[in-house]
Length: 491
Figure 1 (cartoon, rainbow, N blue to C red):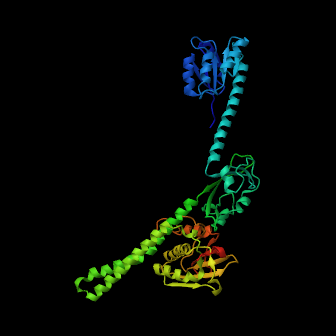
Figure 2: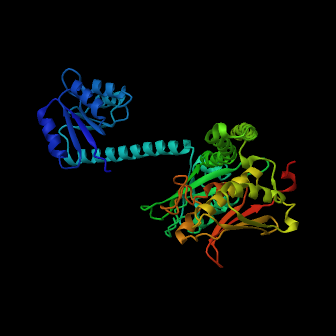
Figure 3: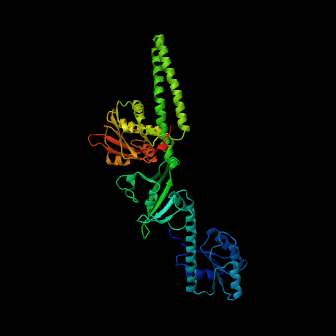
C-alpha cells in the first residue's frame, strides 16, 4: 500500500497558508493547516505528520516554543520541521537549530526551493521509516520460535535467522551469510519425510500429493525424536527469484497426535474383551433368572468375577500407559521371535481368522529398533484397515519378514482386499486422510490415515511404503525397520 505523506502547516497568516496550499496542492501530499501554535501542537499529536512547516513569527506561542515542545514529545521528536522565517540573521537560525529545527526557508520563499527541500526531507523520512520497519521485522523474525531462511533458486542459502541456524546446527552468533545449500545442510542431521514429497523441492507437488514435508531426526539412545515441518513460499517480486523457507518444531504436536491414537487403541484392546465377558455373563443370568441351575449360576458368576478382575488389571495397564514414556522411547527393543504372539492377539481382537506369518529362522533372534508397544500399535492400525476396507470384512492376511539390507528388516503386511487409487496411495500416510467418503469410518476422519504408523517408524529411522498387489486385488503395506544395535537392546 502506497504511503501518502502528511504535511502539517502551522502559520497564523491566511495569505501564507493559501500560498503554501497553492504550491503543494497537486504534489501528492495530504495537507493539514493550523492557525496558531496551540492548534498546531494538538493536530501534530493527533496526526503524527511526516513533515511540519512552522512559521516562526506568530502571536502568543511563537515557532521556537512550538518547535521546542514538539521535540520534547517522544512521539513527535523525530518529525522533520522546516521553519519559515522572514528574518535572515544568524542568531535566528542558531536559536532555531537549538530548539530542534531541521531546515529553514526564508519568506518570501522560492517555490522550486521549497519543493526541493520538502522532497529531500520526505525521501529521507521514507528511508528512515523503512529502516525502522526493517529493524522491527528483523527483531520479530530473530525472536521467532520458527526458523526462517531465504534460499535462491539453486537452493543456496542467502539468509537464516537465529532459530534456523540452531535447527541446522550452524553458529548462531555468526551474523554473516550462510554458505551452503539447504538440502545438503539438512541431510547432515535429518531424514526427509515423506521422501516422495521432497522430489519437487522447493516447489509443492502438483500431482495431488498434499502431504506436508518434514525433517525428522530419529530417536537415538541419548536423544528423543525431533520433527520439523517445512513450508515454502515463492518470492514473486524478487528479481533473482528465490524462496522463503519456514522450519517449525512440531515434535509436541506429532507426539500428541500419535499418543491420542495410541491411547484409543490401548483402551479398546485392553477393555473390550473383559467388558464383553462381564456383559455376556450378566445377560445370561438376567435372562435365565431362577430357572438356571445353581451350578450354572456359580459358573457364570465366577466367569463374571474373573472378567472384573481382568478389567481391573487392564485399567492398571491403561493408567501405566498414560504415565509411562511413549512407546518409541522405550530402551527395550522388539525381538522378531515374539511377533507371532502379538499378531495372534491383534487378529483375535479384530476376528481376522486367516493370518499367516513367514519369518526366516535366522531372523527370529534379530531385534528391531522399535518397542513391543510401538510395533503392536502399528500392526493394530494396519490390520484394522485390512478388515475395514475388505469387501466382506474377512481378509486373508500374510505377514512376510525379510532382510532388506544389513541394517534394515522388511515387514510386509499383504491383504486380499481392495486396491487403492494413485491419489489414495500418495496420501495414505497423511494425518486424517479419508480414503473413501462412504467407507466405514469407525473413527471419524481417520479413514486410510496411517499417520501414526508413519510417525512411529520414521522416528526410529525407518521407512513406510504402500503399493497395490500385482498378482491379485489387495494392498501391501511395507515397513522398513532398522535393526537395533547391540547396545540398544534392553533386558
